[in-house]
Amino acid sequence: MISDMLAAIAYLAMAFAVNDMFIATGTTVLRRRRRYIVSVMLTGAGLQVLMLLASYFGFGVALPALQFLAAVCLVAVPLSFWPVVGRIKRGHMHVVNRRLSERAERAEAEAAAAKKWLELAEQTGHVGHWQLTVPDNRLTWSDEIFRIYGLWREHFKPRIETALAAFHPLDGKRVGALLQETVANRSRFEVACRLRRPDGDIRHVIMRGAADIGAGGRVEAVSGVMVDVSEPKRAEQRAQPNQAIPLEDSLTGLADRKQFDLSVGHEFKRAVRSRKPLGMVLLEIDNFRGFIAHYGVMEGDACLRRVAQAVQAMPHRTGDVVARYGGNEIAVLLPLADAAGAFRVGTLVAEAIRALGLPHAGHEGGALTVSIGAAAFVGMDDLYNPLELTRRAERALADAKAAGGNLVRAYQAAELLETLAQRV
Image (cartoon, rainbow, N blue to C red; front, side, top):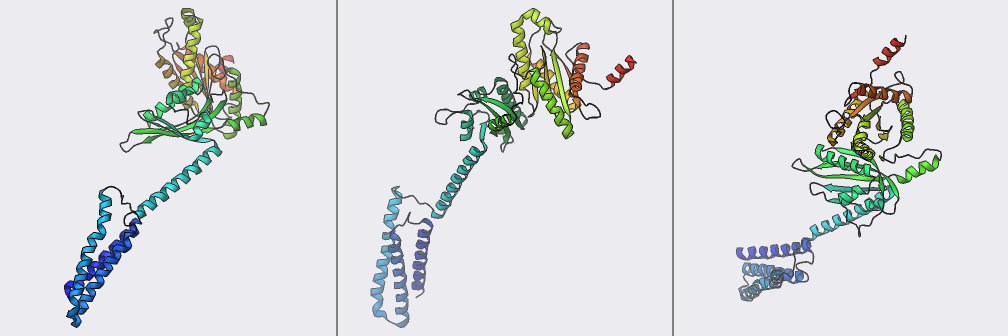
């Protein structure tokens, strides 16, 4: 009797297990055999119950028939599973958990919807995202980046060399230097650039990027966004038709003196309104006349372009202006930089020029050097005229040249008092 009861419980347990298996995997495994197998299990359980009752109430005559049917059910159980096992062994059936499959399908649908919304948002805001892996320099773009570049994903595979070549030459070198610095210092950057598309259209873009740090503490990639701000710039120019168009020096590719003077006036007004400092760095190549006399005019122009590129390629903040100030003078306007900040930038510029290693046979040491003057506006009580800012930078530059060159000098306020005392 106990064995009959346990056998009935076993049959019921197997029936529930088969039903749960069907629910978990759907029709992937059992298909239509679920009903047949469950029916066999329930029949076996029922026969065991009948045998238990026959033994309990003394119906021994019915026991042989019930035992025969129970034996048939016992044989039918493995036979009912055999086709399923055979299909699994032949590789024609893949056991897949339906619940996990549904979750995966929902996750894929949500990811596809999120990607679609991201693409729509990027198209609306003219913002694309990019990633540069390290150290293999593999570059990936979103669809909006292709649109900004005026290219098609089907016809162009992005590479870092071609991506940088599409920028204005000085801007391309600057972005390349910023990427290297970001990887080396695990930092972030933001830079405004000019981008030339294959159709000749010039796009104004802002690039932002940051280093992606991996589990081992190493930089695995640099990821960022590119914002196309060409249309806002054009709308601003249409709204202000009398606004001067940025002018460019034909030799160096920097802003020219006229554009620099306009920028100084604009930034000075903004510094006064915001009560923020405004710095300026002015550099001149030491003994440039001797360089031209020894190497010739063409080499002198090439030297000036190399120096301009080195200054322009240095990491700058958005809003900094680098311009050709005079014949062999280059100026850097530094919004938000005080006197110490301007002097620090001047020191970095001098180091960058020395790092070029340009020869100068007519100069002491045989290498090209520059003299630099730094000045800053820090408040109306100190300086109230943008021309005074440029005058102070020129005075600091003159002091550096008078001291023998290859120096960085900051403007000293005390010098003005000494000059007044001498005049009295």
